[in-house]
Length: 357
Ligand code: NAI
Ligand code: MG
Image (cartoon, rainbow, N blue to C red):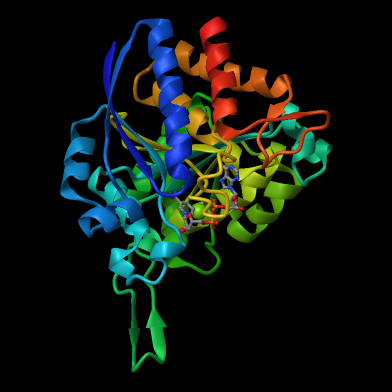
């Protein structure tokens, strides 16, 4: 198969981990006789420095013509003092919005090999395998007005959703549940927020379309607690933008490191942007310490969701597990009797597995 992939490395360790991800995709192409072509564009701080905007037009145009997008990370202290509309994050929020990518899928799996790398007790983490489906284009991050008023003495942010925005994300979550363990937890704050009450209504309506899926509703504060006391009780979680942002970072402790978590931002036709959950990690950028596995696991999501390459995706995930089973790890993880390697060595180990399996 021929596929055209746009690479958006971005800032900090985004550069390092996307290089690793690209090498993995090249290894998959070679092994399975696919032709993947790549085109690299700027986004975030790097784009601000060279083109004066976090999301240049040519980046958007290239993404619109691509089969899938792989993003590293954006942001860093260098750009922290810029005004809101000029910040690197605007590049990422903007490309998701311009591409209509409304669903953020974040699978979180407690790798057996990493049970002891988590700060939680191994018996709590064991068996956890969940998917957070986060709404991406609405809610507090996009609501208008969002401003200071009254000489700076008052501030307002707006949490807005249309019914159809809620319906499409809830549909996506039910579809994800159908190919997993068929259990959906909808997370909201319906005791306080009107938006959450509409959210609950939509879930109650939609569940009749998916009779095989069991559904429960949970308040976000209770869900935050249960995620670290009984994570194995979840299958698919669906929630609005900000709740999903917070819960998915919380859930990342299950895996022992942010450096292990992939994500996909997709729309209904399968087009997607794939990225590690972590940021640009300015504290370790340029030191070849960054764990590339989150970015590499994001390529597996790309192969599966955007290209329907199930076997290839499994191959990448298996390769990662084998490398961990052989006790190789980057500095962010501690494995008993492990062998500490650099980011690029880690990528090379995974590629070696893909090519030899
Ligand atoms: P971060 O995720 O960049 O780093 C948090 C901590 O985790 C740091 O100690 C970092 O060294 C470590 N870490 C993260 N990824 C790692 C990896 N692959 N391997 C090893 N260690 C890793 O979050 P932080 O520090 O809050 O933000 C730094 C910058 O990144 C900020 O400018 C922020 O706005 C941006 N950011 C961008 C995101 C994106 O592009 N999607 C997401 C989150 C933050
Ligand atoms: Mg976040």
